[in-house]
Image 1 (cartoon, rainbow, N blue to C red):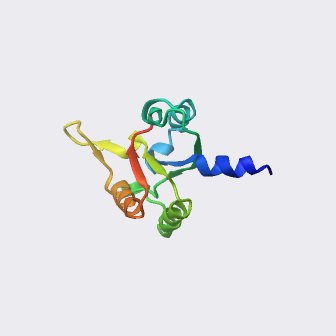
Image 2 (cartoon, rainbow, N blue to C red):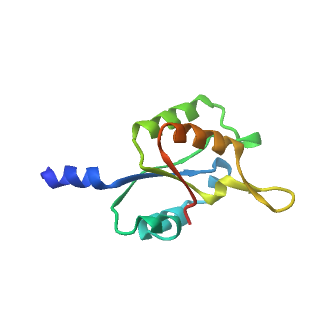
Length: 128
């Protein structure tokens, strides 16, 4: 491979997108991907910077939608740390409306965010 390949890898911002497991049952993620590749909405802040999508992943669920293997979330979180992400974008589907119609971040997602922030990963609220 040409040396420029490695230089480009180094310069590219490494991005991941975190989605809600429940929502992923009815959402293909097309809006998040479109915004990423078109550098629209929450990704517009990167301007002309080169971006690399490292992962588009889901939590392991909550309530009635929890996956049996909850240990799997630990593997996902450790993988995100190992990727040395520049930013983790939190999809808007991770915010749920309460009885008054107010949106609040899911507590499971909040716990994931807190751990990744402690690891030095920048958290960006939003995708599209």
